[in-house]
Length: 378
Image 1 (cartoon, rainbow, N blue to C red):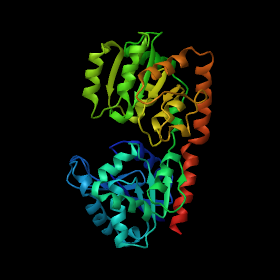
Image 2: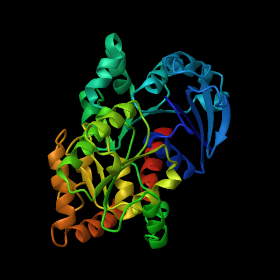
Image 3: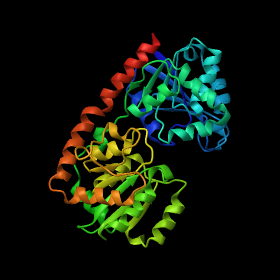
Image 4: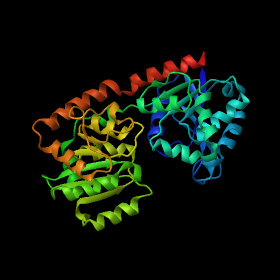
């Protein structure tokens, strides 16, 4: 049985794209055992538990400060693992707090192979700013890695700029086709739209993301000013900017056209997507954008900005429609283009569905990840 120790800032049930991806990959590798070390962050989370194919070890007392302690506490926990476990492969999920923990661990075991996975979605300059005086240590995470897996070409280029001496391998996150690629349930769609008060001729633009500046939800809300009254926005998610966004809705007189759903489970997303007409996230930055891929699999057209990893899957007029960052009018134009340009909507749905199934199927992606892990484990 092969073994890897994973360092990550967080893990389930705290859900993000990186956490979902880690579970999807590790669950499909039955010949591997995984110990994952992360910050506890919440007091009601167990210090140790088994989730899928991973034994999760959470460091700290259950507060935000735990992530700052992870580079110290994480290696200590790893060094207490059985000898057979801690002398194998180290896997860092992102070059963040978990990345610092992985780096510190390799100081104690310098011959350990280290895999770095890049899933970062915030603007890259933010990471240098957060590192501050420790930016030189941040770069050492990249320099120390024996291999880098990046979920987009954008992040692969970043790895090289940050000091990785090899050739990063682009292996994207995937989509659960069985979950998101089901045929649209017309009765369920109708029921949900009635529940939200949508009329048959309403055009529902859905977004699913953290409510933060980098995801451009404020620009999506502002785009309604340039759209007919039957265009509505459905917002799924929570975040630090929620109150600001609610104030913006009131200021623009859009209360009847914007619905805040709050946090929804990953299992609830397919129905919410299929009850909508367009998916839009006008991001200012994006590592890849799993929510786009899930919408494509669910059979609704997407609107996105040409930033970060989005151009890896969005070809304007073929698999989606581009809008410009911080440009509400271009969002409105993109939405109307999808709804009015003859044949475009059907073309986007057909092409994007085929593209996701061919390029972002988890079973195929895991084969690439297994090859990388096996290579480092030799």
